[in-house]
Every structure is written in C-alpha cells, then in structure tokens.
Image (cartoon, rainbow, N blue to C red; front, side):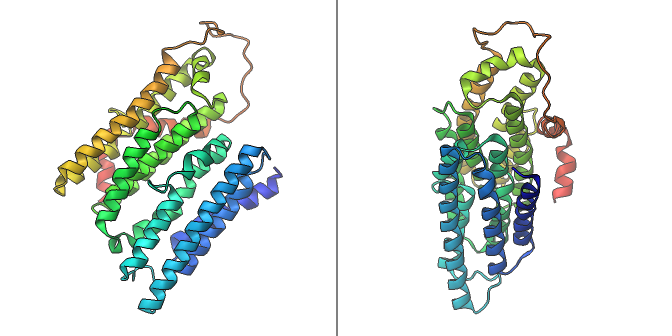
Length: 348
C-alpha cells in the first residue's frame, strides 16, 4: 500500500476514535465511529484475497447495522428528552438499544458471530488493530452511558461473553479464531465489572491491549497462523517461544503474570458487591479459556515438528522486521503484577 494512503488511513483511525472520546453529543460520537469503520475497511481489503474481501464485507455490514441502531436510538432519545446529550439517556428503550448496538460493535456475546470469521480473513497486523484500537471508541461510549443501562443486561452480556469466549475457542485450530474468542472473553470481564468499578474496566482493557499486542506481534514475527505450525517455532527461536508461551499463560490469567491482576481484582470486586455466584461462574469460565491457551503452549514447547532438527541452525536468515513493539508489549504483558498496589493507587 502507498505510504501516503496508509498515513491518511491511520490518521483517520486516530481521528475517529479521538472524536468519539471527546464528544458528549450523540451525532459527533456516531460520526467518530463511522470515520473509524471507513478508515479500517481499505486496510482490511488491501491484499485483494477473496477471504480478506469477504471478511471486509462482513465487518462493514455488521458495523453499519450497529451504527444505524445507535443513530436510531439516539434520535429516539432526543425525540423523547429533547436533547442529544449522552449523559441524559433517561429512556430505557433507547439506552438498551444503544447498549445492544455497542455490544455488536465490539463483539460481545450473543452479538459475537462476526468476530472470529472476520479476524480469520485478515492479516495479523490488521487483526491486531481490529482487536485493540477498534474496541476503544465503543467501550468509551459504553462507559459514558453505563449508569443509564440496566445492570442485569450488563451482567448477562458479561457472563455470556466469558462463557462463549471460553467455549468457542476449545475446538479451533486457527490461531486468529482462537485470539478472536479470547477477545470476546476479555470483553466480558470488562463489561461485568463496569457498573461497580469502571477503573477496573480500564485496567483490564490496558492489560488486554498489551497482552494481545504481544501475541499478535509474535505470530507476525514467526509468520504462524495455525496450531500445527507452532511446533516449528522452538528450533527457529527458543527465547521467542518461551516468552510467547508465557504471554499466552498471561492471557489465561495465571499468576505471577500481568494477566492475573485484572481477573483477581474483578473477582474481588464482584465478591465485595455480594455476587459470589457470578464471581464463581466467571472464574470457571476463565478455566475454559485457560485450557486452549495451555493447548497452544503444549503445541509450542512440548512438541517438535518431525521435519526440523533439535539444534538451532546457525545459518538461518535474520528477520528484517522491527522487534521493539514486541519487546515492550511482552515485557508489560509478563511483569506488571508486582506493581499492582501502585496501579491501584493511581486508579482510585
């Protein structure tokens, strides 16, 4: 892709998200979401592969439907209340419709069906943008309107997302689909605690972004998209394989890695709010996700492809890809747990 075109598209992505962040008016927020969608569509279809075009079409139709629902809900709210302000979502029908549309935008269950299919058709870098940056604007809107949304709806969306995100990834062999289901599960964790402690939602979002970035960038560096190809990574790069296995365990939420921190704090908050049953279901759903992360770790570290040697080949060509973003995201994804008290002090 032409670098000037790429620069314009990435700038538009940034502009759309910033516009939605800064707006308190529904029309401006809707405009930001539309700029965001239109900017990523050419990035998704840039390889002109039939799967990429199919994924782009599915994504565009889904996002257009969600945007139309947001516009309809905000117009209904403005018609009843007389203003377009986001903080005045007093009509329950409009607030439920907005929440449904935003859930469709970020791929919360049961509006998640497009997410694995779309991510499977994209290259890894565009998939990374879709899994991280594209979640920010809709999540900001959900956080702004969360007080007007029925708490039972938020709890139901959170529980369904963590369960389906864990269940859906169990029988997958494609890594992008596994990461899509992982994304759905993580979104569920963020939504379930939103009504009680929004700062924990932000903390979970931050850790999710770094862990997912580390996973996607590793796969990009190794050019891997399927589980059976993971077996060749050990002889290619033992250190990278080790850190990748740890990043996957961090995504699963195992101590002493960063991914344990948001899950632990969210479960603690749910127990504090008198919801031990919800917390138990969430913890059990995390075990489902942990199973497929462990499966990936097993394929990477405990199996070796029969066509490769056990020794590191000294003549292997060096990669020309930059590894600084991968290094930073991996470090953050593995080592933030000891600074949990400092993060909590900043968050509260």
